[in-house]
Image 1 (cartoon, helix red, strand yellow):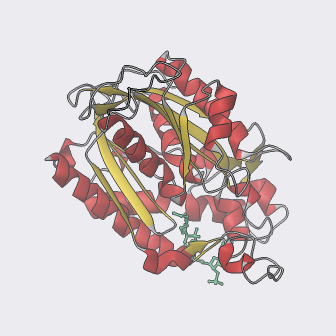
Image 2 (cartoon, protein in one colour):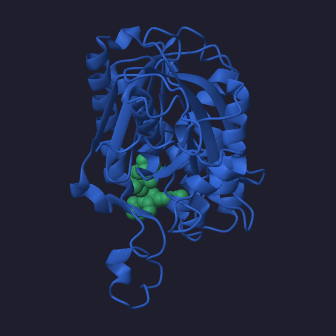
Length: 350
Ligand code: COA
């Protein structure tokens, strides 16, 4: 005998079917108020204002105060993105971060709850500086499969909590921040529709960017971590070269998938790791450097927050205008990389 259909205890939302495009319809950011200038860093480490600005393009970065965590920044950015999208609810929250509040559980459910999105699907994505691109792809996938109709994608990091404050290179490069977008189900020809995506990884180079201790590899030894191994490390020179090569290759690959040429792109919004990396990519792609949005001078490398913070900066200063063809791209630890394209929507960054 057939079982009677079970009645669900709450109404099933009327979601669109599979195949919808993910349309970017809101953008919000949040930065801690504490500014750390190059002069501040030079006053306590063996470096200079000129070296940091000249070799990285960074003038200042924001750093959280004691007790402030990644979720605090993510909640603020997420709320602003929802306001920008004129929405109060979403079906899913994807948080890209390498600096979660705690190793367990994921930070996204806490962020969703505090924004008033209790019951939403919520999970973290760790792809280091590529996290936001991976998060966008995950959000677009939830929409394309009909699992969600609206997704909040947040990139938030507090690298000041994992860099060695006495390391003149990493302490000078990284800053804290958060950026978020709202994606909604729509059609591929709308302004703001994302895609295609180019995503990839190369775990052979996993050691080029890492925090050696704190994970199962070290903890399974049941020995205390070696002093200093809890800090973020990177092979700066190798990463520099690979970032230029791989972000250029990924940009070309996503344009091929989209049937577009480099000259069709009005603006590039790339991960802000080092202004010389961005200039190197412009050079490699044969594109005018003026097409590349840059805000690294004010925020440094904010990891998963980098691309949405640059998007907001471009939006606010008029570099990104509705209808423009925009390429988003990132590269980071893993190694990982990603790129996508969209025509810029008519939105206000908040
Ligand atoms: N102040 C002064 N000197 C510094 C310095 C600082 N803040 N940081 C490094 N140096 C020194 C180095 O120790 C080195 O000295 P040495 O030649 O005596 O060994 C010298 O400057 C040159 O170092 P080098 O690595 O050749 O400099 P660089 O031009 O490659 O710049 C980085 C270094 C880290 C800024 C650059 O490699 C970079 O941006 N890499 C990518 C980093 C990144 O963003 N990673 C995140 C993931 S995408």
